[in-house]
Length: 140
Image (cartoon, helix red, strand yellow):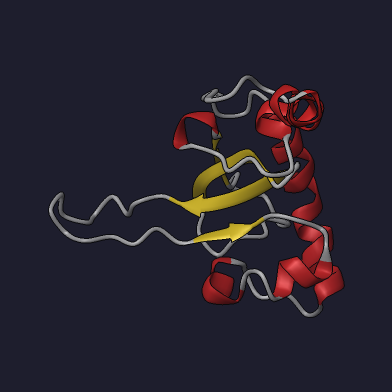
């Protein structure tokens, strides 16, 4: 009995930051972001969306999700695209294969990393907020 408790205690104390934790929608932190009119280094192919962060497998996972188009009818089906926002080259390229067109074209993976790096930092700060936080535009 004591052995089971000794093994379980660190996992319970780790909470959402634990290695085996799967985030729930209530734990995701969100912040709307949009391209400034003169912003040359915007890394995404759409001008606005939502930056999201949640703890998964013991680390912060930052994603960018596109917004629902304003001209789309209320009942029309919409499948939101999202990409993982990271400076880790393998995840940035292979992990985002399904929706890679959500990134603007880049000449190389190095250029994409340079463009995405500020958003990785912003997303990491977003994960420092309380679980379920909704941060306003430009607050981080």
